[in-house]
Length: 168
Image (cartoon, helix red, strand yellow):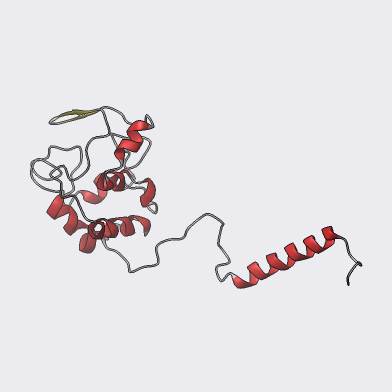
């Protein structure tokens, strides 16, 4: 075959062969480049796995519990409605919890302490709370830290969000 084909034909055949191999080798026929699927780990439950973290660290008196000082309650009867699909007061372009996407959920930003990146990008708004107002995307949560929540405590929250933030 030497000398019988052009370099363009050889490149075209190599590309075609590579494409066919990728179609056969990929077990997920619905895959889209750059888009990840839902977390396939163990199913995380709001009531069983996430709410105990909120109850211990967030839903306390004068924070996100009774009496309430913050703009949302994280008590077990209120946390789902306060979080999922609700725009953040401090960063209105983000929802507190964007079901299926913990990366853009403001709750995770606050738990990771990365809200200064939103402030630096000009994405913060002034919010009036019962105890005053905040105009700088607020503080790293929980405000009683350090210590803040550990990665082992934040991961179930991320997983719950990535798995669709179900009211379960």
